[in-house]
Image (tube, rainbow, N blue to C red):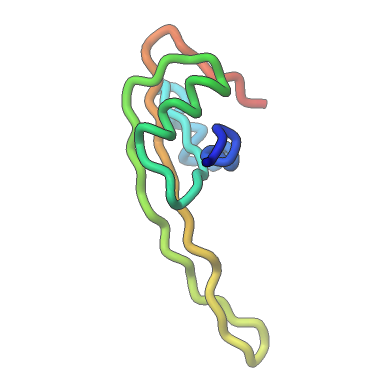
Length: 92
């Protein structure tokens, strides 16, 4: 059984994510096995906010090369969480 802190790995601080903050949307890196309902419950419990919508997407790993050896970065899941009006998450 996964806890809420196992579902939400970290909040993504990207240039695109910073611009979405004005629209009351936040980006999270989440566990690959989690679904929208688990992500909603975890965000509401950790940050004490009300979630309006959750959009998820699977990000494929990219090919990387170090000298002669080629490999792949790990695949991961990203969630865009829209909060209800009046709810905010303080990002430092």
